[in-house]
Amino acid sequence: MRIAVTGSSGKLGLTVVRVLREAGHTVIGLDRVGERGPGFVQVDLTDFGQVIDALAGVNDQHDGVDALVHLAAVPAPGIRTDVATFHNNMAATFNVFWAAVRLGVEKIVYASSETVLGLPFETPPPYIPVDEDYPARPESVYSLVKHLEEQMAIELVRWHPSLSITALRFSNVMNPEDYAAFGSFDSDATARKWNLWGYIDGRDGGQAVLRALEAAPAGFDRFIIAAADTVMSRPAAELVAEVFPDVPVRGELSPHGTLLSIDKARRLLGYDPQHSWRDEV
Image (cartoon, rainbow, N blue to C red):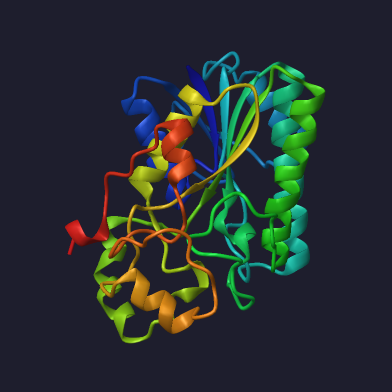
């Protein structure tokens, strides 16, 4: 496929581009900044004219795409003001989705976020491990936008039944160079409780995007994408008992298994995380 990837110069974007190219796809990166050359187009995604023009074709770069991966965003709360985050992220996602619809691009995979699950869990989750079955609980403007993006996708696929939009609720993205710090987490169980001690290796994030492009049918669906384990050396059951003693636990917790359930992604997308921080330190 010819695949446009927005946010191609970001932490996850760089890895996704590499994974897709290694799988044999042609990738056109779209971002505000990036290395000039074949396979990259500089675009302001808050400008609809630039977005639809970039997806339709750019000189000798490409003459249209078959699929779209949308990763571009202000990537977390607190980086810019709430208003700036909302205006940037909401406008960019609408422009990207709407341009794809106008151009007949029927396969979209995009970065939603674990934050819609209720992070930082100042109000405890309804149960552990968390999954996609309970309603979104945004607790920041950044997360609110992620929730609204999912709602927008639901309506777009209703209007366009052949359209496929997959929301990947990525956990905290990590690369191998980040793992040296993980050993310090064990001293305070509350320091990483904000996302139930979760993370995602960027390489497995790329795998999830690839699997969604290959497997997702028409319509909308959402998937938690996390590593198979936690960031902690301490057993998961011990962490839950200490920090969330009143939260119901569903099923038996494996010693270091993720508390961000990836069962749905495994079952429907064939997602199978291959990387753990434990193998890197």
